[in-house]
Image (tube, rainbow, N blue to C red):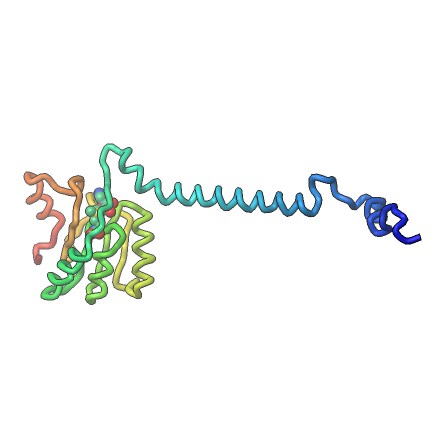
Length: 183
Ligand SMILES: C[S@@+](CC[C@H](N)C(=O)[O-])C[C@H]1O[C@@H](n2cnc3c(N)ncnc32)[C@H](O)[C@@H]1O
């Protein structure tokens, strides 16, 4: 007799073979739990990424010596480019930040180099240079400006913060040692 109640044969077979899942982990439960894992992964991954990127920017505030990144404005970049029009040779930007000065100089045909303490900014600068197609003439190094000699560069750009300034009484000695005499 049709509609006589009882369990349909296919369900009976499944549960008899021990294949049915516990109520909480049915098809729906599994779907929910994998979404849960996925969401946790996304949120966790995002937090780790934000932390990794933000730390180098935030830790200066906690250091004894702060290293703030204040990018040059479009007008300042235009001024640098204007000054470069009557110059030749190589260029170095000391504390190159996100690489905008170096990239602008490379676009003007200079072999340009940036030294920057913040590794994230250096990697970002390299990416920008690659994106702008000047990766061969724009190079970036993770380095402390006090540990580098700039004597091989013909043009030196510094958009500094107070921590990058040499006290007046040490300036002459520093230039004699580190800056090219041809400038
Ligand atoms: C005012 S920002 C200028 C950034 C870039 N030159 C521009 O014009 O957009 C100064 C940069 O110098 C970097 N800096 C500070 N002290 C440094 C050091 N001792 N060695 C290398 N870079 C340093 C900072 O991390 C920051 O990115």
